[in-house]
Length: 218
Image (cartoon, rainbow, N blue to C red; front, top):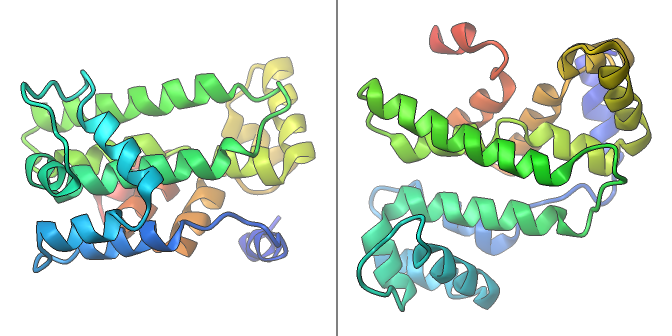
């Protein structure tokens, strides 16, 4: 199936997920080097559920800060814009798909564990290579398979056939997708990421995560 057909199919999905206005606003603010921690804090404070999630994550053992972070401006100062943007993206995307439960063929829990492992591993590799934007690299790894969630939620019947073919033939999922659908999860994920106005680097990482050499040459 041609790429334009994929765009048409996505366009016909009435309830295709969108990031919240608050999340979109935070992404835009944190991409502006002139923004202040106060501006970011005000934007986040418009969504009390998001405030709670960010403070809970910021105080988790994952970050291991010795003192409790009790306010969003404090979290922004301590964690930095890139970390805050990543937390907002992660929380927003998780919430978006919480109500779109799978049918058992696609392992959602395994998917999230794989995504987190890829994010952490990507960050470790980037650190070893001396790459500075570690938090950006983390989010590339975390979101690289976003298209699988879209396929599972909105192309359920087609994606179930893909998953079953992968198990039956023991082939790569992208090969099964191309064989049965004519496109793969990388194309789907990048189109949705573009719809969400995510940073261009994130969109490229999602689109070309199966072709990293091509991506490095851009």
